[in-house]
Image 1 (cartoon, rainbow, N blue to C red):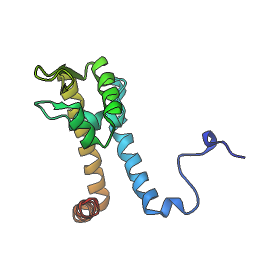
Image 2: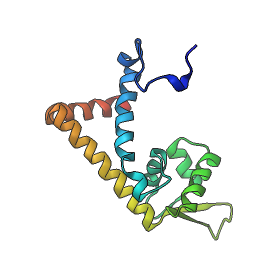
Image 3: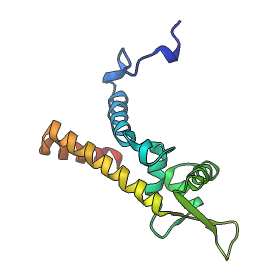
Amino acid sequence: MTSVNDLSGTPTGPWPEHIAGLLGQALRRLREEILDGSDEDFPGLRVSHYRLLELIPPEGARITDLAEVALMTKQGLGQHVDYLQKLGYTESDRLRGDRRVRLVRRTERGEDAVAYSRAAIERVEALWAEQLGPERFEELREILRVIGA
């Protein structure tokens, strides 16, 4: 029997040609690009943290609202926020009118992390546009919009 730890990063069999497998491979490349060099400037962050940081609007947001947008439980999102706060990427305060509600904001360090992840995504988009050609890349973008709608 083969251990999961012995498997390479490339699945065999029908999975690589399955649409979910192809999308997964593309997403893996995107994640790798985002994390390439990330630990130097933003230690401890995973792609899910960058995504959460980007979801926080400049004026801040309530944990409940962020959880809904991120498709997470309030508890799970709260744990992510606590972790990001511990590392200095977010800050939160209780609302004066309702002490049960936490308002989360990005810190300057969090803003820098968002800028880093956006630049990484732009690098991937530029690479893919180069590989596909600008017209095919825009077609890919439109297809993903339609599928995701």
